Image (tube, rainbow, N blue to C red):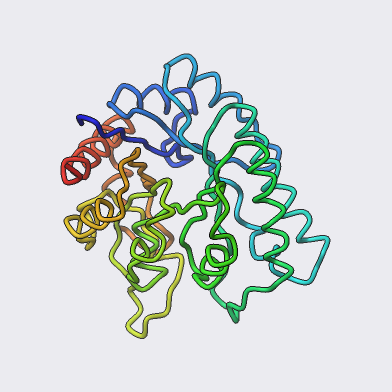
Length: 279
């Protein structure tokens, strides 16, 4: 699309290796890719394939399984979680990746009360990111109170930005307009679709986080793209999608039946439809 770059996340669900995924993403028409990272993982296959196929790494998604520990009283657990996030910042710096995406909480059975000690730990992460020239895109997930606390307490920090996940907004954040809240800090997107919250009483669960292709769920993409334009977002559009269904669900089964190259090509077609609405 003219003047609108498109990015797709790598996935262990694609059934092919990292270099092959990157080749297919580039051949489909995407302009960039992003990758996840975990402590001990080798990022060099991504780096080498990015160089071979001349396609940039848009961001690295930091590990998130320990993010709730950063708010807790157990100093040892908190230090392990913080150390992983700082290590990811250093990886971004080393390979000139401009953005690290980070959750700020994980879990559904919490009192959702951010702590001062948690903010102090995140301050250490933010200072390290600033020193390394890396921006952190804090993503909306469950526990929106923690994201509120981050943006409220670090509003003036240049290394702090917002990663808007369109699907999480619907199934974790009860369709609250997070672009109206944080759109002025928006630095990246995770665009995907889902069917909202399935539980009649409004209980949120990770099983609703389907990461469908855009236009396969209930999202209003005219509204979403208008909101993106309203907050002045004019950067790369990044898509985070799942090829396989969640346990006990079957919405993604049709994707899993596709050859991976067909699925990625279809993802590009949907991405182009979103980009056309941004004009």
